[in-house]
Length: 124
Image 1 (cartoon, rainbow, N blue to C red):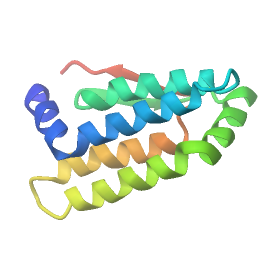
Image 2 (image 1 turned 60 degrees about the vertical axis):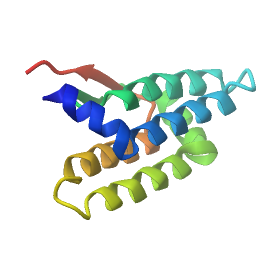
Image 3 (image 1 turned 180 degrees about the vertical axis):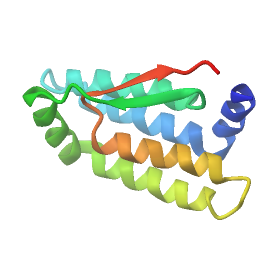
Image 4 (image 1 turned 30 degrees about the horizontal axis):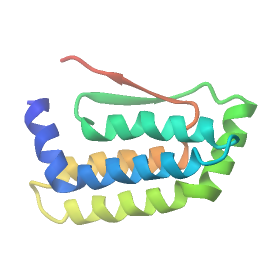
């Protein structure tokens, strides 16, 4: 079932979400200081292609993660969160789009705190 959900996810905005994360990663990798932020973006861009069957765990919030999250919010986080929020609301306008809207809301939260977050595949 998650394979079908992931294929439909790409049609209902998942491709744009993944491209947004990928472009944010490229922009952040321009400078040496931004490379850790860019690598995190690439990791979540990969997850944005196949989000169904994936859980996000927030933890490991050390001082480094907090500093990187603040820098991230100032650079790209707000834009990605707003984009995911708008797509999530648009998907939730129909009953069929609610699961996709929930995935967009998951990425909106992730866009605000990507450092210290990990994702794991869940096998049902």
